[in-house]
Amino acid sequence: MILSRTMDILAANPAGLRLYAGVEDWPARHRNLARYVFLHPAARALFDDAWNSQVRGCVARLRALAGTDPDAPDLAALAGELLLKSPEFARLWERYDVRPHTSATKTFHHPDVGDLTLGYQSMLLEGTPGQRLSAYHAQPGSPDHDAMVLLDLTAPTRARHPASERL
Image (cartoon, rainbow, N blue to C red; front, top):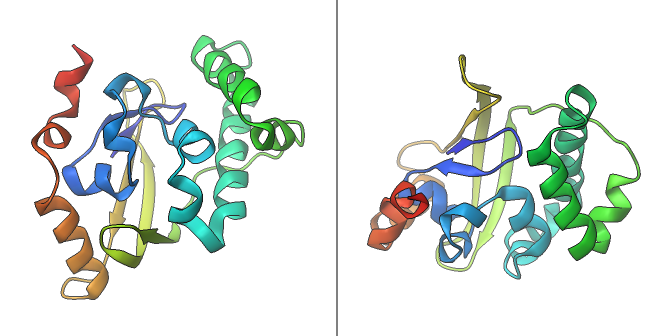
């Protein structure tokens, strides 16, 4: 996935988009991982046992951005929406925790392919306004890798071309 500094999904391969169950049903302009985590009905079940870690990390990354660019319109719009719509976001936003992106593993309880644990790495893209490449990976031949291949192969056609929906 290519993410904006506020976690808008700018581009994704089909498996990457489908990994966040149900986000592909939202219009491309609304696809944002922070919005997904706090507002999508499928998100809590997707992360289940890692829910608290996921939401705290999401808010802490947005707080890190607020520390470097506190008047950013894109951050203000997203934080404002989440403050109004998610009491959990509001509670965590008031804590002022800050955390940068890291590499680690995430476990997903996906409704279509079951449980999968993936490694991930997030990298800044030079020459962009804070965009990141977030790459998820699994050992080839493993059940986790097979699940990602299945997500890719079963993606609807519109999930394969999300950028065209932005036009």
